[in-house]
Image (tube, rainbow, N blue to C red):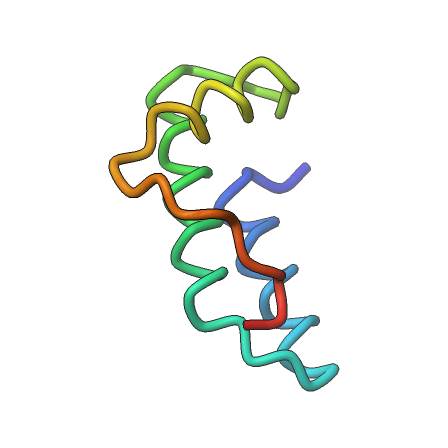
Length: 67
């Protein structure tokens, strides 16, 4: 089974191969994976996703994943 960082790298590679640029979103997803790691999470949960989003330093609205 892949770790979350490995799964993220594979996801970004596939999306980029399909033409998505994923510049800023790749950074944000990496920050989310780091947050999950710091929380000791093995799985992504709604609670963790909301906690991460509500506690981010930049409170801008989320962009689409193709930015």
